[in-house]
Every structure is written in C-alpha cells, then in structure tokens.
Length: 146
Image (cartoon, rainbow, N blue to C red):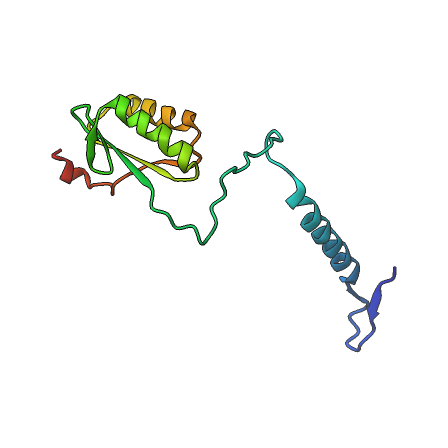
C-alpha cells in the first residue's frame, strides 16, 4: 500500500490522495456475502408447511357448492331450505361423489361466529379440501346505524 503524493506546484507541500480501490473491493465482497446468506436465513422456528391434497387445476372451473346459515337458525343448500341433519347427509353424499368440489359457507352477519364455525368445522371433518367463508363488503360506520 502506498500513498500517492501530489507534487504539483504551489509550494504548499505534499498533498495526500486516498486510494478507494481496497474499500470498494471490501464493500463488494460484503454485498455478495449478504446477497447469498440473507435469503437462506429463516425467521422463527423451522416448520413443515401444509401440503395441498386437492390442488386446483386451471381448467377446473367448477362453481362452489353454497351453504347458507340464516339468522333464524335455518339452513339452505343452493337456495333450498333444509334441516341441519339433511344438510349434513347431502354433504356426505356430495363428498362421496365429488370430493374436490369447493364448499362456500354463507352466514348471516347477526349470527354468532361460534355457530358458523361449528358448521364449517363439521364440513372440514367430512374431508372437503376447499371450504371457505363468504364475506361481504365492509360497510361504513355510518351505514351500520351508529
């Protein structure tokens, strides 16, 4: 390592010039190290992710089977009123014939979440892979009568 000395005129003496090449080399090596190491660092505990057993193919565009839970405690399948027992029987039959069919559970906003979750859980336990809750648009606070 050396120091370049500017011996130009003016009689002010030696003028040091810093050589930045080693600094740039070190910064580039550190950048490469961080680019390689940081993507491999995991946050938290290592876990095994859940695998999808009913992968949806792009050409399979089947409409979901819609189940409605009304505020009065009644149930409907595709706009047909049924009892809870009839609902579960029909879902078992559907699961036997079309296990990949998606199920969409619609619940009235006035229902307790626990009631909707119980039905949702029963449907999941039957073996349907694609069970989802239908939601509506969020209303403004003034629209809710407050």
